[in-house]
Amino acid sequence: MLSIVVLISGGGSNLRALLDAAQDAEFPARVVVVGADRDAEGFEHAEEFGVPTFSVAMSNFADRDAWGDALLEQVRLWQPDLVVLSGFMKLLPPRVVAALSPNLINTHPAYLPEFPGAHAVRDAMQAGVTETGASVIIVDNGVDTGPIISQERIPIHPGDTEEHLHERIKPVERRLLIQAVLDIANGVVELGLHSRR
Ligand code: GAR
Image (cartoon, rainbow, N blue to C red; front, side, top):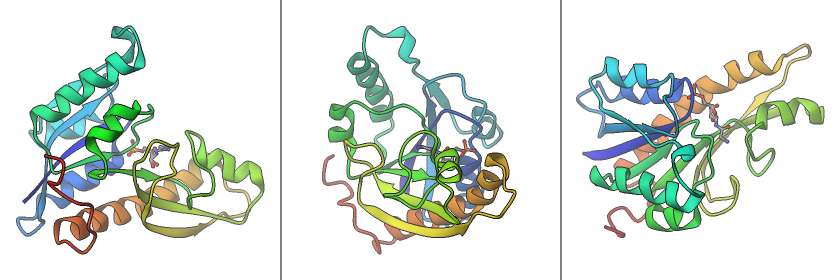
């Protein structure tokens, strides 16, 4: 059974999908804790499923490295096989990435390497393209530059708003994330699990 720490910043709809999937006794992964960089709205999903939460706010630390070290300490308490960034909107310091990668994956609402960063949906709309996408990647030290595990194209409709488009992207992200977790758990996608622990 793959144990997962999920890190969020917002509403946690992707987290919710993972929690739902893990209700199935056959699903080979469990979310052991949900962490955030704030008192995230998405904690309510964890609480509903009886999964513990923790938050480590950057504002409580002198610098990004000190914050990252505190976050890493919390993550390590749970000895996870995999850490999933799911709408976690802070860049992890390089030493945290080095400590967790390659067992550190991220969902992103664009067809990477197109539109990396925190405003991927808006950026795609502003670029005037007719399609964007969703991706699941292994996190490296760049901004959404890591190896791609899976991705899918999603059309942009005339008259789409950023909100509407994002709401169409998210179900695809959820499906890709759950499949990625399944593939990692079943060894179909090889991340080098346990190699750093
Ligand atoms: C998701 O679309 C996720 O890919 C995105 O934030 C949203 C979080 O939604 N992440 C990024 O843009 C990271 N660069 P959720 O909180 O409802 O799961």
